[in-house]
Image (cartoon, rainbow, N blue to C red; front, side):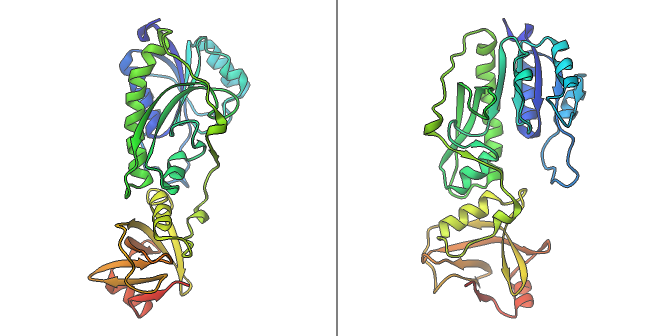
Length: 310
């Protein structure tokens, strides 16, 4: 079967969902239905809309609160899909749904499986100081991110990349991965390799409270936390004199601390942290209640330009 004769249903959201759907359309796949999410008004919507792309291409779109409901299952069966794709769709799909497509159901996950299975894999990879991650296309099973691997596309994580910059790389990697692999899949020429889950890892979601900085950690560990949750994610933070100070960016050069840490201080117009391990970290963006602080604003707030943290 060629891509031009294949029928598909697509579960998708976020930028990866938009690029995944775009690839299928570019390949000429007959996408008969798109299932996506309603945007949460309480969420920072910084990414593109799958629903808008589908509407632009006259593809029916549904946004069920429960994708495993009987109504959704019947709609999918009526599409008679050869294949189901999931691109950053946030709900688990049950066996009844996964059994509908003739060839099977396939998911793109934002890590090099079996590592970082589960939620927010990009953020976890940055938090743990990884130097590489990527996008994986795998067959879907009931157990999350556990089905056989078809292909992967790796990307580098540079020392001062944030989770957002890495996510942009993974979005591009997804496009390359699908362009390479989907034609082989539909022609029956894609190989599948079972995942050794014992060689990987699984992580859950993260909460805004998880961005609290522990100043007993090393400068590199603190830097990894800051860049893992930097905007558009909720950001790292600490409390100074009863005020929440948001630390929204950092830069690590491996320089020694200038004094006894942990402490925050300003030098030559830059905000630095001397950390407990004797290394220095530059805090490139700090704010209180959404107001960015430069050296003068920091002095006005705290009547000093140097504060001990423990």
